[in-house]
Length: 178
Image 1 (tube, one colour):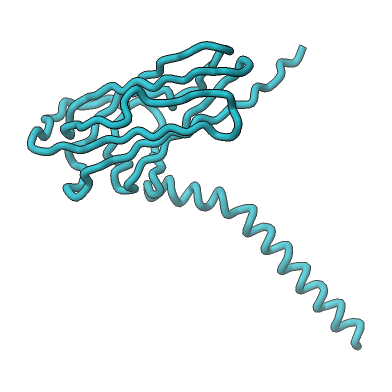
Image 2 (image 1 turned 180 degrees about the horizontal axis):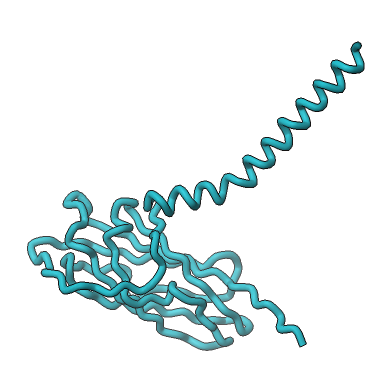
């Protein structure tokens, strides 16, 4: 009788451990799906160039757009915007250039954007961005990468500053099979 109770208790604990592992494993995809669906945490639902319709600029309003750049890990790259911030009128098209320098071996990078505050993400419209594709970074070269964007005039009136940050990641290259 006592052995049978211990066996059932061990089985219950085993089920709890498996359930906890499954929940932890599923948490990241669930979080990403939720952020994508709701447009929160600065995640943009579309990561592709947009076609912009003619929009009347709101010249009565100015929004400060800040650019923050980081390189993930210990990649030997310098990555920065040529301008730390710009003031824009919602509805106007602007181009900002980012510079990346590779001080290491030949590599490929991918920039991942994030927008703050969260409610500004759906109002940033990009027509051109280096973040849409992987970027080849030959050793020792400096590349200029443009990002063309517009802030939608429908941006909430209480948002006066939008921070657009990019983290540059090393993209592992798959060795070609011969």
